[in-house]
Length: 69
Image (cartoon, rainbow, N blue to C red; front, side, top):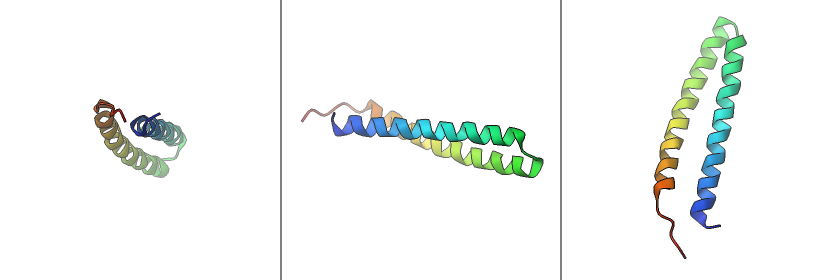
């Protein structure tokens, strides 16, 4: 496996992990009292922002042609 593929696999794994974290926060937020609900919503917004940046970077890397060595 070349370095690009390793990097793409690592990024996919990180995106999956971030999505799982969002799911956990959404469940906690749903069951939380109002003060904690707003805290979880803020954490989810921050995580979605990070996830968006990662997905954007992933799409750029995924679109690069594979370099043969």
